[in-house]
Image 1 (tube, helix red, strand yellow):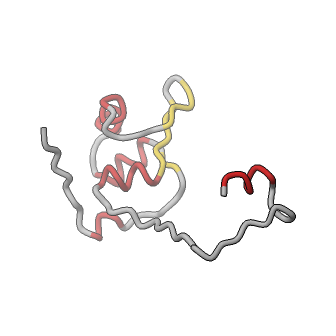
Image 2 (cartoon, one colour):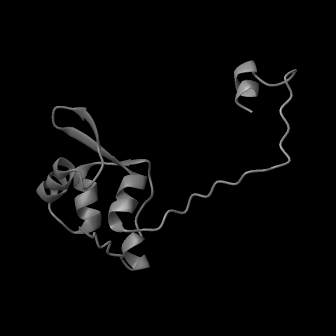
Length: 96
């Protein structure tokens, strides 16, 4: 089964960035009802952290992914990095 990801125009991504959103805030951003947001959470289509029986928070990354935005976080690796057992934590040194 193929899944089609809809991409929204950049203007749809113009909202205040913060770490977590309530379902009501997500509903306002997406122009849908609060109940629709909760349905997407229960269906597993929108990731949310459940903090209580009826309390959910949606991380920014999950919201952007749901909206079809491309990830903008990049990881860079410096091949010249050196690990020094004298100055680094022994557990970190063991990983390298």
